[in-house]
Image (tube, rainbow, N blue to C red; front, side, top):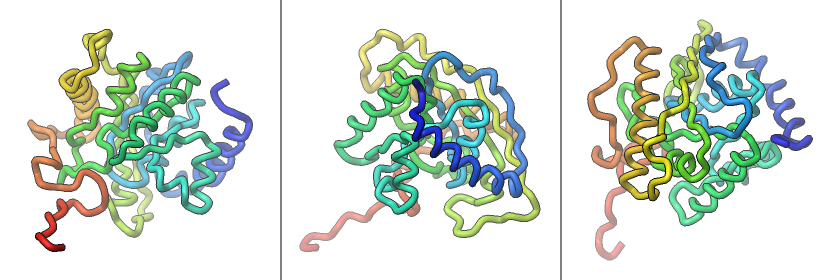
Length: 254
């Protein structure tokens, strides 16, 4: 069984609360739902431009009969109201920068084995690219796909940043915004199947995922992406968090 009764109830409550609100302020154009698997768990890899993206992607998946399960920051599970909602809807807590990350992948693997749709943002956070193109990906989604053999489904969307710009404090509600979302065919990772999961393999598989996703975003935007994906590390930026500035090394004696 994909969902417990408690999980279905929580999803129904969340959908009943959030969908009417977002329908008022956001007009949606969805394409490619036929590319979603129907008989197995799968990994959804969307681009990430603003904090409302999970609601946009989750709304789409729920409407297609696939309650969304996100790799969510473990700290969110401790928050009032939100924490219980995440827990009882079987979301997956993830430790992004600690030794708990391996345990997070194990929990994600169990969700996929149960036939669920697992959403993993391959960039790991909101893109740092100045023009909001998909940046260099992190290897968690590729590792999980190669370990489990489940398909990776790229989902590109554009327009949610008009409702809430990246890291903005207030949404721009009027006039009504539009978001386009398209589901791609499964990423072809067949050349990596059966090979040892080395760093080189993970990097190459991740690049394949990001390439497919970037091509889809480019078609939605009607624009040419940069020749090289933005890399926060090489740009001296933090990989996570609201501040893009890298931590300054402490001086001796501090």
